[in-house]
Figure 1: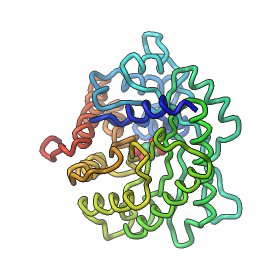
Figure 2: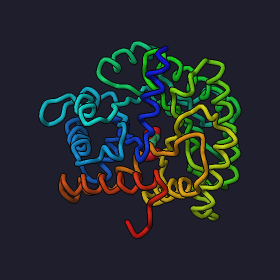
Figure 3: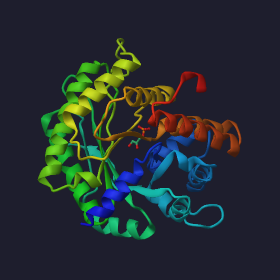
Length: 335
Ligand code: 13P
């Protein structure tokens, strides 16, 4: 394992002012997103929409890396250059989603286990050759009356740790993403309790599997009330509870925490990160973003109703707002 290089890439991905664009929606998810704005979900339309994003001006000051999907890493820009090569030429690291999705956890009440360990090291070798330098694996934990079960948390944590170790052996920085979903009526306290447990078990598994933490990134959810809970906590409280949860459960060796947006509004995702970085504490890790929807929702809408340029402008705007949130320098008036 080339630990020096892993460390360098992980640190560069969370360098000041920068975060990650998650553009690794599976073909199914991306197709649904295109259809939701009235666009036919063809391979060429998925390519065109993403190539337009990747051609935006000056986004590299806010975006250190882009997570791609298997289809996209094999596609080309309009001028015929391979997408990962084009990103690299702009100083942006190409990344790749390497899990193969979720399936029902046997014997559970609707819980999911993420798959993709079979043949992973071979796939990593190919992606590395194509230019990828980091990877993502997303585990999904849901909260309801019966769930999550200890078994589901443990099974997903084991896979996350095995995935991370394999990627590191292949020279790729793993993003470890155990997402506690915001769907449901649960309280923020319940989200905190479950997220704490998930992080604790995930890092215990990482230790068992010899994952090199300075060469890895964590992609967690923030601590928020369930989407359908009538008692939504305010933005300051989200920031405080999230910091408390991370401080208690994330080893200081991890160089960066790159949040997912998970269905939060664009402004909430920016504001929450901004408050955490304004709180002015000496955190052991960088606090950054790896947003999908919170960086792309407005750009996708513009892609359907506006022009390629207005779609790029919408993306650049969100990138700029989150770039400021990295320093705790976002203000509502800037919106
Ligand atoms: P969202 O920010 O839309 O949650 O997407 C991030 C991601 O990559 C989920 O795996």
